[in-house]
Image (cartoon, rainbow, N blue to C red; front, side):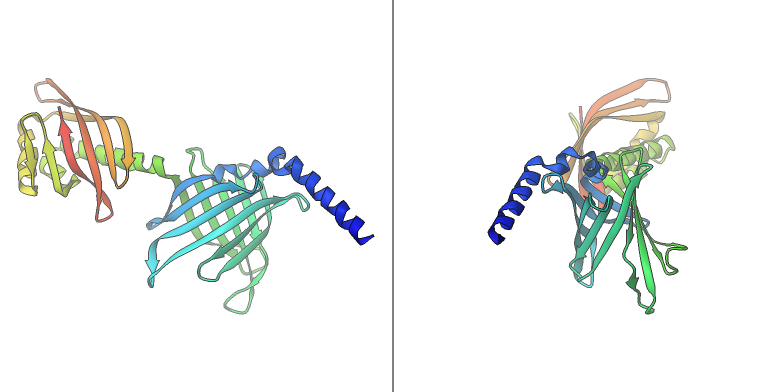
Length: 286
């Protein structure tokens, strides 16, 4: 009788497995908007990096988190396992980290383009009972907002704990470079020609058909010479690509001078990180 039960149980398990329920039930795809390779930003800037993938035949949304900065020599890292529980008809999340922490959210649902979890009640530092609420918002620009809150009155009111925005890495890099180009345009158009030197790295250089300029003072002199040209400056991008630790940006530069003459060239900028900021290592034009 015992052997018969084990055989029957094994048959049921194999039959269920063969159906791959997580791939056929659309409920398991409700949290797919979080999937991606993200840079995560808080109010003070970059907070960490998070990679979200699907594992176990579409059944689990796996989060792998690493903080951007070390605290007391330790980079905080953790993982969360997110899945839809067909028996309870709830989404649930289990978080574990390298500081020994763990949080269980056994109540969760997706509605109005947001995934919201509630944690189990737990004892807080004041020997009271708290509940955490965790909400992921699917934003129109493709980013994801993660909003964490805590309640110390059995869920009657909640206080914010953190507010993070997940930005796709490739999208973030493009946005950063475009922002730098806009600031360079603004400096030129406001007549602050020498200040454009500040966008170059300490080893930055400008290379043209008959020009090669390097060093801060030489670059200042180079950009100051544009006072004679004046007018307005427009930078357009054709491509942005990150290769290893540098970014290659290609585009066209167009200056409409004080005499309404057009000066247009193609260029390639090579950016490198310096003091945690993207700076121009090489500026080539033709």
